[in-house]
View (cartoon, rainbow, N blue to C red):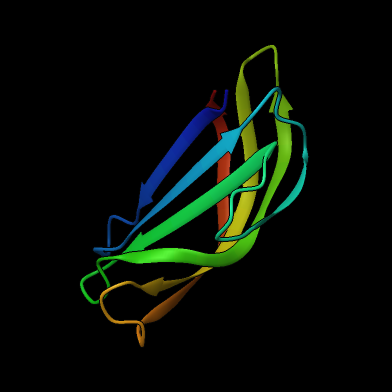
Length: 106
């Protein structure tokens, strides 16, 4: 049975938003995990991006790095980057770089 952790973010000055879903079995451990279109457990991540220009941009490839997993406080921190492409208009793509999440509750 897999567990899910969903992280969503937006920039107040802009209209864009980022979504990150981490699916895992067992316990999360620090490490670097590559995204792919095919789920690979024990850790699988997917990402999405939306803006005024692209409303359905889903992850094609990328990297998730879990830098800290605190089992006492039940939090996770890390970084991510990914490339996504629009389903409705495949010529539209976006690259998300330098994504950071800190002490997100599990």
